[in-house]
Image (tube, rainbow, N blue to C red; front, side, top):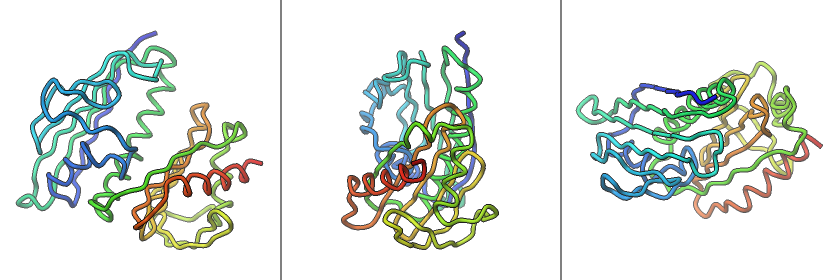
Length: 244
């Protein structure tokens, strides 16, 4: 049954309005995933077949699409970003609103979108605070069928060498692909998601098993010469081994 939804968040971040604007329009690979930049005008083409309905840099940007490409569960999607300067323009206040229509499995779709929003916007703030405007190499991958089990994400924690009680803000030694050890800060952790921040990367673990999909990983690598294909292959092998 079709039903409208709206997910709204407000926050402040230690970045200028221009930096925040860039992250929403041309720098999405640093915190979400790479998208084609919108045409810089009202009526222009936006990502995923959308149309730019508001273009007022660096204050407000809105795009809207019906019949969302590749998403059968939605018939309408709108993203609205409002940015205001704080502290003389050194910081920014941001309002993010994601709205639209889910056409089936509404409760599950909304719960997934709502929880993902918090993780993505946290990753945005990490990107703006530690990495922007460095170029990014982005890789994303999904686990095997076994990673769709209800408790699948819990297997990631010991595989990384983390303790069950490792809290957000803790600096840890992590065991990654090929048993390689590296240091990272646990910048986000709850039963649905896990975020690691290194000096050169944001590594995100998505417990999409909670919504019937495989566990996923995204790697935002800001190191000079980073190779997305190498990162994808390495972490895919690691993830497959977790659920072998």
